[in-house]
Structures are given as C-alpha cells and as structure tokens.
Image (tube, rainbow, N blue to C red; front, side, top):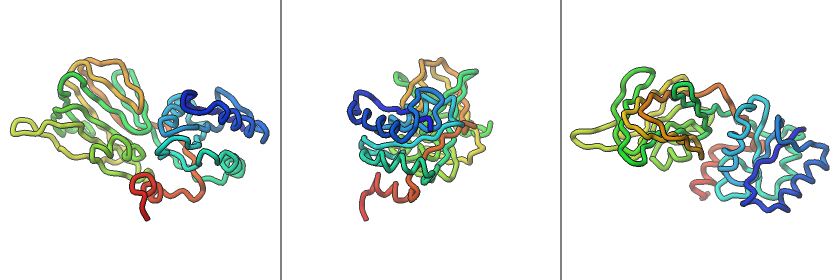
Length: 258
C-alpha cells in the first residue's frame, strides 16, 4: 500500500511520527509524498482538513484515515496509540467508509472547495448580499456574513450559529447567517435553511472587499461579485472503525454523558 502521512510538525512529536513510519515500512507498505492510496492524518480535525486540501486533485484515488492526537477528533476514532490496530484494519479492509461530497463555490472562473463550510464575510463593513435559491430570489441579507455548509460540516461553525445538525448520510446544503441585522427596516430569514443536495445557492454581494473562507483557508479580498454554491463531484472517502456510529460520535464529542 502507498501511504502518505499528514501532520503538523510543530504539534506532533518527531519520535512519535518516526515510530509510525517504522511500523508502516515493517509491514511492507511504502511511504510516499504523492499519489498515495491512503492518507493517514495525525493530529486534530484541522489536520484532516489540511490533508484533504493537500490532495484535493487526487480525491477519487485516495482514502483518508486518522490518528487522533488532538482534542476533539470529530473526523476519526483511532486514538494516539492505535497505529497497529489502524494498520491491521486497513490491511483487512475492516473499516466503515463514509463518502463526503465537497462543497464548491464558484466566483467567475475561480473555484473553492471545502469539507465543512464556505463563508462569505465582510470584516470592515456590513455584508449586503442578495440571496437566491435555485435562481429564485429569497432575501437581501445585511450582517457580518453568510455560511454555506455540508452535512458533515453542520457540526462545525454552523452549529455555533445555531444551525441544524444533519447526519452525513443525508446530503444537504445549509445556509446560515452570521450576526444578521433585523429591525423594522432590514430583515432576513434569521434561521438556517436546509436544502437538498441538488440545490444551488447564489449570493450576489453588493459590498467590496469581501473575504471567502473555505475550511481553514481564506482567499484574497474580492470586489462585489456573484458567488454560486453547490455540492461538487469531488468526494472524500473517510475511514472509521467498523463499529462507527454517528449518534455515538455526537454523544461523545458534544454531550459526553450516558
């Protein structure tokens, strides 16, 4: 198996990574930097996002599996000392694969992809944007920004905005507002809007110097423009233990009680 390792060197001990590399090679696998079959990401959820963006042009040919050394670890269930178990499960194909469509935002010919969410924000002035769903006018939004998330991303920034938590097996787009202005003059839906996977959301901004954030990345500032959101054809194959349960995951990460 061709295996790539993705980690943040400043956060993961060098000896720990060296031990993982030794175990991979001793089992007859090859460690590569390009065109892997499997990517093992080591760290926290941010490391998974980093791994996806690193191999975004090769997603159809690679599977992702994580070893958690961070705090939350929403994208994986193998603990820091589970490397032997992880490799055994890979070799025996004893895992549960969850396929996730990436979000896509298009601004002219420029495309942005994200696992969790894509944000349109105006850091210096209120964002003013017309909102269209499937080319039908919904509202004119005024506030700090707008977030479009995927189902798996519904537990990220979207959740902090009181958006709905959606099972990753139900493919959706969800639109949530960041600090909307609501008064007798200006008003908006003031609630998250969940749409089916074939829907398209278009934001026609009226504000200059907007920023487009996609996962942990941020674009250069843009003038007023039209941004079109949809689920892309790009998919991430994310591997969990064979007994993976989304409900148990929600309980362990957000509630922590029996």
